[in-house]
Image (cartoon, rainbow, N blue to C red):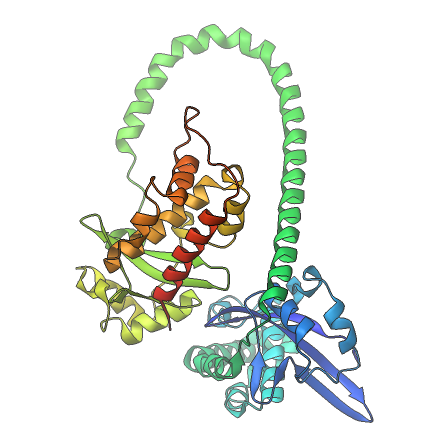
Length: 446
């Protein structure tokens, strides 16, 4: 039996969480299986940095007696990142079974159901076993596509899909109920977060270098083709000139006939799903502008957030019309109706993704290291939340007469004639962190 302890990622309603799994192993004549946890709690963390900080500092948990445990605290943060084979999207199962039962669909579903069974066994989740035992298809997923072929196979797959559509929330809720994220040592977390950030930076640089190399190869091929085609192009240039006027007329006619691209549901209702990436976790919520004034999902200055888009849709279905300033928007009923009937799809556009993580460190290193796009979006979010809550502290802190406001202005509106902010930037970092902490206190996690 395997003596390994494996990092895994679980896609749950509260978000994508990382934990450790010890597949079945034999010890003293008995067979065991375990997850990182203690008593009735399954420990899971928002990323590998938090997981590493925990395993390096805490000894009291269910994996402490595993034969290979002594090796785990020595692992680097990148070594604790779950690989693709150990990433299980439990939230996405209903969408998965909506596909045709081909090799890839059944293989992915089989892996997910296998880890769910292990969770149910270890955490004693009888309600999960009840769901998995209610359709025969769950038991034969490991056999691949063969059981799901022919008329009987189609019926087997249909029963399986219907069971998931009707009861998969029971599975998610049962697992969600035992998940717990313990606190970790702050100093150790700072170290592991730096490790993770450095790894991600190196990975991004390596990927960019590879893309640049591929682009160079393409450019070389294009240059050769261009050289060959130049001669032919010269021969037909005069003919092309004569045709230009006709082509321009045709282009104008085509432009008149082109229909505007569909704006999608969220564009039609004028409300935007937004994603907020904080140092500790990722959150999802909604925001719109009414007469240029921001309005968030929530009320009395508290922004309602969830850890996943699925959890956000579920919250809207259950509580969308209570304690919610967005309910005053004329199109809100359309959103609530889609959430109630289960057809609400929440997708976040790139310009509605706000990354607050890491900005304080960048500010500490000076304005040249700050990404102006990231900073501009972060300032937009902080201002919107404060304006909605009737709080002037953000606008006051970002005024150009303040040191932080001067630095932010210098980054967002560069001017070579202006005097650059000078180090140290301790006061600016402290002021920024205070704004982020105040914003985080506004978040009401559901």
